[in-house]
Length: 114
Image (cartoon, rainbow, N blue to C red; front, side):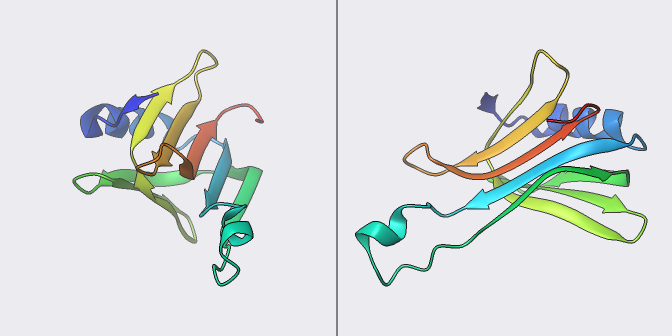
């Protein structure tokens, strides 16, 4: 992965607009954090291989970034994104890594299931 270049990510998001896609969206603040601090509330979210189709996609911010996808009846967004790539299978992979390099958020879009 490489640091996000907003113009390039915007192009990639627009190229997928209107297509039926599979989404992977995951957030985590550290599954093992509560092992070290019992007062720490572990929270996260996970969606994998749900189908979406968006009519508009936009990257915003000055870094970390937010990518929002407008669907017929609502929005999907991921915030805190720092890195991206289009992998060898043509999937758009976006991630947010904290200062320790640990994954905090992932947003991935693909024409094939993950």
